[in-house]
Length: 351
Image (cartoon, rainbow, N blue to C red; front, side):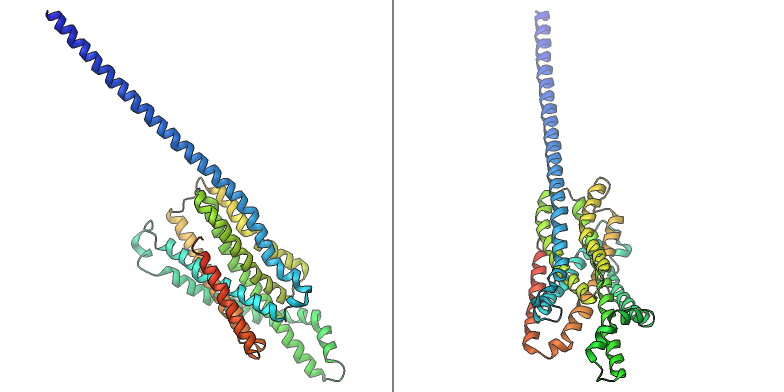
């Protein structure tokens, strides 16, 4: 009887042990299956993100080329000549895009990086680094602007005069005094140098920002984030390129220099995306080093773009003789600026 009781107890124990093992096995299988499903979903998300990034490289490249090349290619059409009304309105719109890029896109990104909780409280939360860096960048841009003009006035004026002197002197003819011709030549040469410096400094600010936004997109593994970014950045590059292309057109660079500047503007964002793809395994958006570098670069670019948009583009045009002498054109130019600012600000919803 005792043996039967012991056998029953042993059977019951084996049954319980069997049920427990089966339960553990089921849980392990479910856990492994869950992990496999998560790994598969992550892998599919990365693959989808990579496809979108490859698409982004080519679409943004095309948008950039179209944007910066359109003012140069349309120069031969009477409607789009640099001294025409349509060109003034297009440039005003593009200047508004550049202004909004600095204020609405670049500086907020810098604020987000340099005030991130991933950075130590001291010194990053104790001082407004973004606005300070942007202010210093604007002052340094003014210095570069000023010193470059002084340098080229002393050393580069002769070359510019040689290129354009014959044309300007021909306009004055033989009935005008030599002094008037020389004065006109000096004014034309100074104006041309100004346009050339504006084009170079503006491209520098745009290139810095373009690399940063490209790097961020390339390092992202979220397809849902990348998809709206493509459209937003294409719009950004298209109209920012129009603004820079207008400056290149007024600078009257030779074909080689134009090609170089068009190339660098067009490839910087795609290059940033490709760099981000290559660094996606080691690059972390939330690492202190990445936050500081990206934040400082964005703040510098924002200060530079804001200065260039307000001082060298908008103020120079609106205080110039063409708009000051034509109130109707001036009003339409203001509307064009507001449209550029509004359109680019709306893009901040997605990018």
